[in-house]
Image (cartoon, rainbow, N blue to C red; front, side, top):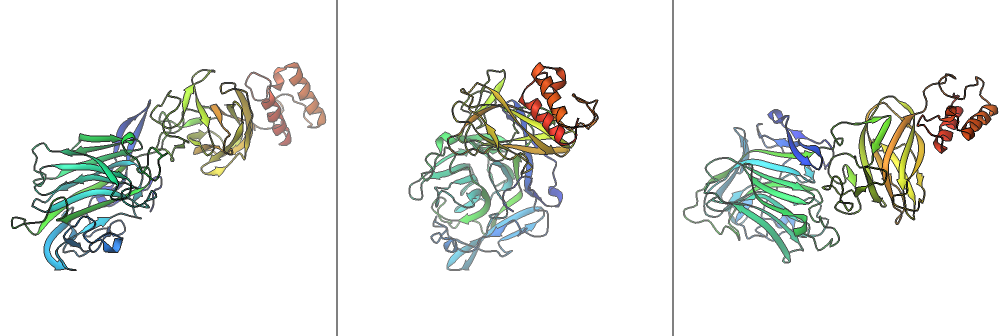
Length: 495
C-alpha cells in the first residue's frame, strides 16, 4: 500500500469525517483524513505496523541502533500490546541478546508510505532517567543516500524527566556530515502526567511543529538540503516517508538509567492520524464542459499529484504564488501559465454534460520553439499529439484545436507538455464545444439534404463570403476551426 490518491486505513471507530481547512492561495484546500489507527481493537494491526527486532544490526546499523541505546526490541506482547483503546509500548528490565532492557519499536514501512501531510498522535510519555520516547519518520527508499542525506523528520522526541518535547529534521550528507534543524517546547508541563497531541505539518516548502495545537517551531526549504541533489531545493523532504514509534532506553542523548528509573514504564499512544490535502477543483467546483477553462485554474493539490512543474516556485510571481506552476499576467487579460517545458503537466477536474465528440481548442503562444500537447482523461490518451506552432512571442497568441471523444460525468483531464527537451510554450485557456449535435439539416448551415461534394463547395463559398452559415463552431467568427468542425460533421453524415 504505497502512496496513492485516496488511500485510507481506518479501524472501526476510526472512521472519522474530518476536514481541516487550510488557506491555499486564492482558493480553499482541505486536509482530509488519509490514515488513522485508534488502537481500539484487540491487537496491533500487523498489516500496518511492523515490529523491528533486535539492536539495529539486522537493519544495517551499529549495535545500539546507531545511538548506543541499551534496549533490545522485541515483538512480544510483554513489550507492545493494545489495551483499553491505546497502544502500550513498555520498557522493562529483562536480559535478552546481551542487553539488560527490552522495549518495542514499530514502523509502517511499505504499508503506509506517503509524501506531505499533517501527522499527529495523542501520546502519554513515560518519565525517568534514560527514557527516550519518539514519534518520527524516515524515508522509505532513501533515494538521496544513507542517513541523513535522505532526511529524517522527528514529530516528537523527549528524554528523561519529560519537561520538554522536541521537533527536528535531519538532512545534508551522510553521517558524520549530517546537520539538523529543530525546536523545543517547554512551558512547565510535565508531559508524563497526561496525554498531549503532537503534530507536524509537512508541506513541500515548510515543516511546522505543534503541541496541543500551539506552534513552536518551523523551518522552510531554504534551510534544508541534500548533498546528493544540490539543484533540488526540496530534497530530501520530497519523497515518501513512513512512521515510526518507539521507546528507547539509554543512548547518547538521555544517558543511562539509574537507581531512580522506574521499571516497567510505558509510552501510551491513544491514536495516530495522517491527513493530506486532497486533490480537488480550483474554486471547489469542477469545470463545466462544454465551456472554457482558464489554464491557471488547475486543480488544488500537492506537486506531482495535481501538477508537475520543471522548477520549484511560481517564476511568474502572479496568482497562486504558493504553487510551483509559473503564472504571469496575460496580454489578452487575466493570467496565463508560462513557459511549460518538457514533462510538465496540469490536471483539471471537469464535469462533462453529455457524452460525445467535442472540439477541443487551446490558446497558446511560443516565442521560438513551438511544441507538442497531449491530453489524457483519467489517465487515458484522448488526443494524441497536438502541435503548438511558433508564434514569435510569449504573448503572441494563436488557437490550436483537435476533436476528442468524451464520456459524461466528472473526470480528471491532464494537459501534458509532450515536447522534447528545449521546446516550451505558454497557455492561456482550454475550451470545449460539442460538435455532434445531431444530423438534422436545419440545425447547422449549410443544409442540403443529400451530402456530396457540392455541399463542401457550398460551405467553402459561405466561408469565403463570411456568411454566418459557415460559423459552425458558433463563436461568431470564421476560421480554421469552423473548417475542421464542418469536415468532422460531414464525415459523420452531418449536417
